[in-house]
Length: 184
Image (cartoon, rainbow, N blue to C red; front, side, top):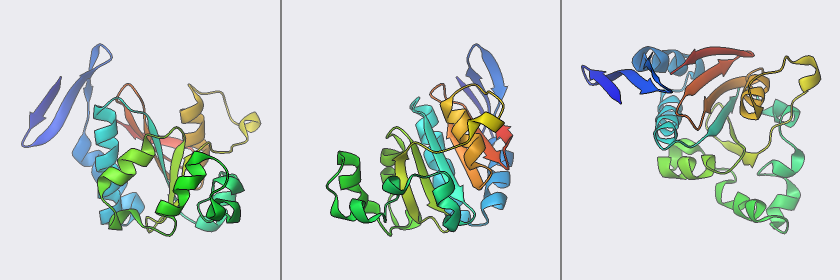
């Protein structure tokens, strides 16, 4: 159940309690952090759609794509040489479809579909897709225990950029610099 006012969702009944969504304010924070309004809007809308469908996802926007190897295994990178041959897994056979593509040049449905694949979608600050369906690396020995794998990956990835985590229960969380900035 949702409550709207002036065309904006204000409250949502989820998990047996009412939550203040504060979507407009959260969206402004998200857009300001990304500094790219088109990309921010596209990712935010996809996160809302995934949350509505009860699909979990991890959407990562790296500040510096040269640091991608800190969280992404080489074989998971779209531009990895063995992925260019597409001889490994069925996922790597799909890599050529998004190699060199920017999300702002593709329909939102493409991002929604690849975000449904287990693992993270990682892109650079211009929306160029670096990987999808990737299990992110992190060094959990120095990090405190948190609620689950997607949250742990979100915290680790947020040290290198901005992250939207969509939980299967419909909760969307924004992480930056290892902290949860907002939830809705």
